[in-house]
Figure 1 (spheres, chains in turn green, orange):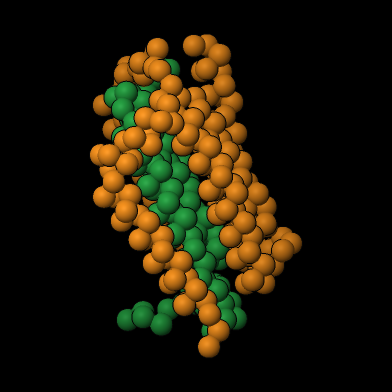
Figure 2 (figure 1 turned 135 degrees about the horizontal axis):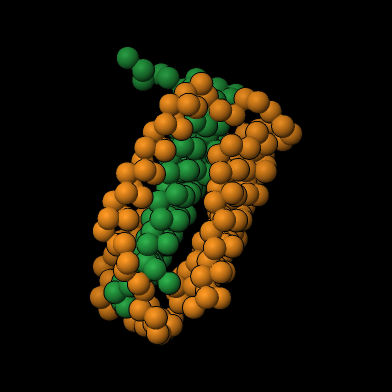
Length: 99
Length: 164
């Protein structure tokens, strides 16, 4: 197996996630796209770990998974708060800090 | 070797289609369900890379916990459950251009840097014990920082979402 097939798959997932973050306006869907990006990074970490025959890649992937879990928890709490205050999670309407 | 490449191809195509559906589908619950396919595919890729412990954690944490959180988020924000045409904003084509450009740059750099690089063919399975030893010896400080971070996120989420 080539190293590049995993890295290209991860690059594709990353780009799809970036598209989702930019093009979606529902807050929950933006969080889902962020999960795609984080998973792409994890594939890279594990692939390079296997390439260099070390467990460090896996360890950092596990750390990223833990951070992603924390991020989703706080992110969904924020989305919930936005919904409670504005009765909508349309992110294009959240422009309080727009200059 | 051939079987591995075949399996990788099937998984990669399934993940690619599901990932595109996550960001394009007009039904928010379907997006969450397509995300399951992508996350399970990532776990399968970990198994192909002989990282079995990470694959199991991926299933437990992502498919088991994070997906449920997403479904709760969908329900609690009373998102439209059926089809709706109101999930994308009006900068879709700009976003498509940006992500295609990003993919092109990444693919070009990767093809340039790791063109013929092969993974070690007889890679031993990295045993869970080695991962645990590594976490608790070499990476014990980041591990402790992560546990405090999880606690902080837990308390923070409760404080943010609480009704006063």
